[in-house]
Image (cartoon, rainbow over all chains, first blue to last red; front, side, top):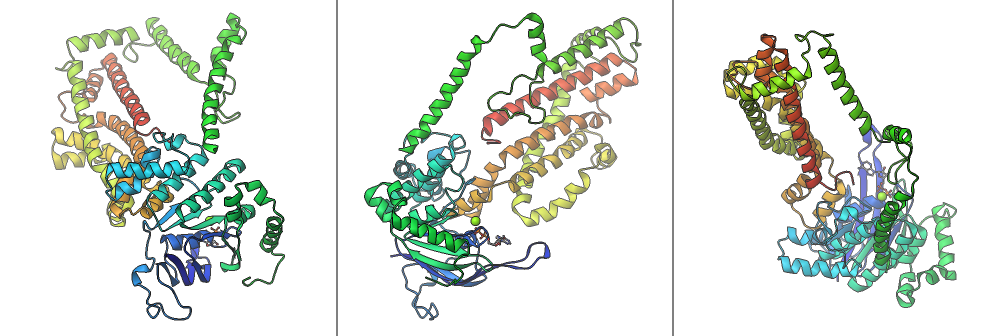
Length: 282
Length: 308
Ligand SMILES: Nc1ncnc2c1ncn2[C@@H]1O[C@H](COP(=O)(O)OP(=O)(O)O)[C@@H](O)[C@H]1O
Ligand SMILES: [Mg+2]
């Protein structure tokens, strides 16, 4: 089974306009287990996007390394000693990691189905197979009747559906989602939260999902990480199962109003507002 | 599911449009004076327009009235002899001259021949510029070496008036057809290359990142993302470029031309045939305008997503 491992990773951005260098991430150690839905929550500027960019391979760490593969990393040992394949190291973007952005990432000169099968086309997959796979994932996100629509005429929610279908069509090992629902209205947002959980259940992929919304984070996460800025670190970690509860009962409102949920929400809000000063991992 | 709601929203917006259409006949009929005033009114803020946006409202009617008034003023002032025909001939003289030059010709060539030569020069320069400036502009956008090479050259000559380097072009290339086309070409090249480069710079980084995450190579990103994304700006650059082409035409035809609209105008000016001068200017203006309309149509066809 594939897992993503982040080993002693730091990222230091050079200061802009001669300013101080920014320590965006400091000594991050973290593993995303097979099939896990990890949600990162934190105020803006705490390094969430930086962490996702590292996983996607858009940037390289200043120190440490990331791997995506089937090998285990034993803490404290160099990775060669752990028998880790060097090929597992993330050195750049690749089709084994699908990325969904907040917006602006669809190609407006292509229609819905062309956007969805774009990656397969680049890889030279035959037209028939492309269509079949794109159709499968468009159906999964509820867009089976919109194949020929120009994407720039779709609503924000539908554009994000296309973005999700497009990332899945490449059959990546994991999905990286940077505030994918951040620009949507509250109603559409809730519908897409449920859709993403369905997609997760259906495909069993690892998910790394960034959000600003505490409620969204609690609802979606198998594991929630809370980050804090200057320097960017993971300060808290919680194992959660509200997503499983939803997938059983299919009633999001009910799950979101469970006493455990509300208690957890207050706890996380307190952490974010700095009321809980102790820091460290839970 | 929610899609159906979204779908319903699209259907709903259509039914809103039809509701607006149905609502129209209900409006009270206007009195003649009111109707006249309404022609010039800004009009109510339509759905989709922003109230209070700078310059909001219709201006077509005002433009039409301005044009007609200017033409009338021209006709009246010349027909009544307020202005000597040497300075400004009457519009009727110009039309008569147009017919004469079209059938009998002026300066050893008919109007069609003059127009043909000028269009040949401008459009061959335009085609050459398209073949070179667009790839070079894109290349400047995606490659730092290309940018370093071409940047100083383009930035240096771009602000120069074509008349300033015309003598040099003649010394190098002679007084034949080549130097005329090259002069126009140079005028078109800079704005077209810079637009293509700006187009490359305007690509959303998310689109590029998404493509890499789908396994695209560098070349595929350039070919499938950057060149497509830059298309709106490239088309704008083509429109600006052809405009520069027409502006430079007269300068290019100053030297040893046998025919051409610019040559015709200059030649007529030498002999103080003012009506031919005006006629030539109007013909150049009309051709340039028609081509601009064509480009705008092309823009709507090729990049319907522009600004969305
Ligand atoms: N390209 C960059 N150059 C310099 N500093 C950056 C750059 N990108 C992000 N930063 C800084 O790094 C910190 C973390 O940014 P980011 O990862 O975008 O945070 P988040 O996504 O949590 O809002 C911020 O302080 C930000 O200003
Ligand atoms: Mg961010």
